[in-house]
Length: 195
Image 1: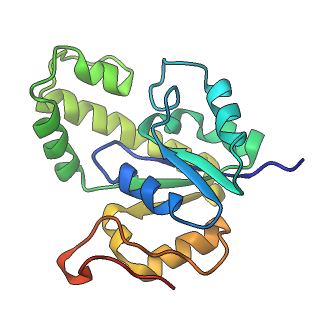
Image 2: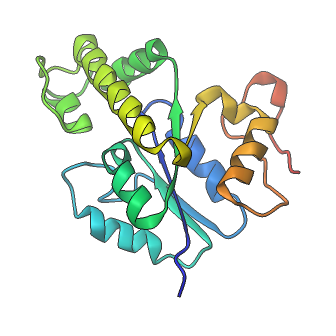
């Protein structure tokens, strides 16, 4: 029995990972989740068990999108011939969004979220900036080691039909594509577009 096509998306969080997962999951014969239990939190569960559950789905294209996958890019590339989408958003926007969404969180929240220690235990801007900088370095390393397996995209490219078609073609999806946009700008109306 052949393995399905494994697609893994990753980004800092607050950058469109949920929208990306939703878009991919709308394609033919696709089962792509967002931060599946055990996969999105670096110290939770067993990564091998999580991958086995994803691979075991009854679809041609399977995968998950979440920030913690960055820790497994090289492994998944070698062992499962996975393809990756590194989605990013401008750092200032990510930092501001995290700050708005985590300022009310308890001490140590950013440690828990990113799974590494830093100088501040509070969910403040300094802690967020530190975590985002570390994540950006991990993105650079992943790309350096696995350049041919990673498609890098900006959040706003979820609004660009031509880019989405290119992405789906690169991933190996069959046409016709479902181009129901997820991260809409005003010019896209309700986003119901197919090709």
